[in-house]
Amino acid sequence: MEVWDSKLNDGGSNTAFDHAWLALHADGVRPDLLRFHRSRPTASIGRHQALDREIRLDYCRQHGIEIVRRTSGGGALYLDENQQGISLIFRRPSDWTGLGLAQILARFCAALADGLAHLGIQARFKAPNDLEIDGRKLASAFVAIQGDSLLLHATLLCDADIKTMLEALRVPTEKLTVTGLESARQRLVTLKELLGEVPEDAVLQQALHQGLETLNVGWVDSRKPNDIDESWVSPALRSTCIDWSEDNTALEALHKTPGGVLSVRFWPDAEVKTIARLQFAADLNLHPADMLEHLQRTLIGLPLAQSEPAVRAFFAENCCDLVGFTVDDICRLLQRVLNKLDQQQEMGLSTAQANGLMVLDNGIESNAPTILAQASVMLLPYCAKPAWCQWRHQDDCVECGKCAVGDAYRLARERNMQVTTITGYEHLTATLGQMKSDGVDAYVGACCSQFFIKRHHAFHEAGMAAVLMDISGANCYELKQEEAAYAGRFEAEARLDADTLERVMNRVPFRPQRIAPTALAIRKSKKCRIPLIEP
Image (cartoon, rainbow, N blue to C red; front, side, top):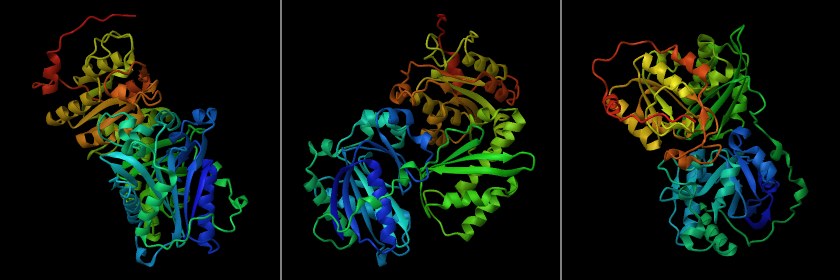
């Protein structure tokens, strides 16, 4: 195996080089290669991700941060010279026959961990593709396959420019972990932090080299491989896009799986009830790499009712390797977007309004009207109250009529629903737990879509069905103030759409006053009231 340190390059060149060498290796015209490399500032997104949903495009363009799409799947990364890149391209060993992507990633990460152990660092593999120390991410690994050739590549945090990372990636801090209220720096760990300094390149690469030897592949002396003419490295991957920013006419749905988030955009032909067009996106690992594109082409033109049988038939006929998700997850995603079509027509919603409804089924049919008919509690975010409101950080409202939150309180109370303003993340988890103890089956609420995706586990683990309305305007994710928001200190204002609120609440029935109020209601009835101070 050839070993080469190609030093610092632009991210597009590194990505395109790996892509081209993999293709030529699969054709038998390039040898096995271990390449160490570093990248100039680059936003790197996975093979299947929607570009504008993962990257702050304007920021990257204004600050000269290159945007590239990898050959491999997985999530978005910010790369710079602070990260050691490792690319390993070789023929699949005979004892790897039958291994899936998940097992290959686990072996690669184990080899990297063995290498780091030579530096005194004890890292562990975290599925599907990370190396962690005490729950803090140190490295991410990825895999691409072409024929019998494998590309295993990883990025290792030697140091980290957290500020630029948060600016370049749209919601990166929540992708790193799902626990706690730590800052982004507390969710990452670097070699500099662990060792007190960044190891010299030769020392680090030698340690990683020793770890990768556990994969039982042969090596030759470190040097630049022969016959490298970088003019054959195509820049085509740099401009390859799944970009969802230009067309807002599609219905959208998402589904969180253990392996990542599946998303779909859908354009129906309403007259003949067929699928006119659809497009998938995902931060997942899967093989073949073009599986989702093939599935899209299979579904276009089919009657809506045939979408799920067609998906199951596709996977029965095609051998696919799915990491952390299943065919059932894809079917569930499609059912959600079809339900949005029904909800749009039944509730008289615009496409934007229908896309703004986030449905959590948890055992109840995943249709918004069905869930709303059973909803008995309303939860609202404090950030949707005006910044001047003295009740902004209180869990109640006096319904002064000066914002949509007051309207929501009025509509909920008219229906004898228990309504609460959520004042922080800990308050949310405590409230959901109390609602579950009180026997609440379903609730209606509001939050931004970013929060719903990244804190999906909190909603899911509560075990109740919900219809949540997306809030617009300033939110903590766009302003990169998640930590302040979770602690109840976010000062900017978001907005709850009044028309959507009215249409949603029209589906919640009026109920007589309960004889036995919930424990949550009893506690709230004891709250002291404070006067409203208007601006």
